Length: 123
Image (tube, rainbow, N blue to C red):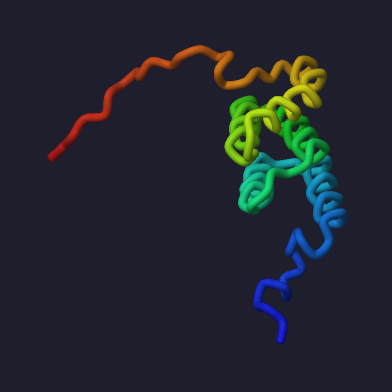
């Protein structure tokens, strides 16, 4: 008897190369920001961080679709998914030329944000 999730064919452990190819192609061809967000939710929902080539295409897609905040958030997601800070640094080193070309900073480089309007309790 097969586990329930194996019937879906999306199990990344079963064929890692096909999974990476599928999502890299998806980000190369995505043409709507909603679909971009859906794809990002899917690849970051797994227990591992997506490979550099997939992250690279996701960042390119977010800039192509003119969704700057999403590009910055992708880097935040990578930082959260890696196990060690050295791994995040390795991602940044690999992505640095692309990030510079597309003008995508890390969130820490954007500075601090001040609350424009404070939340009020109504109770």
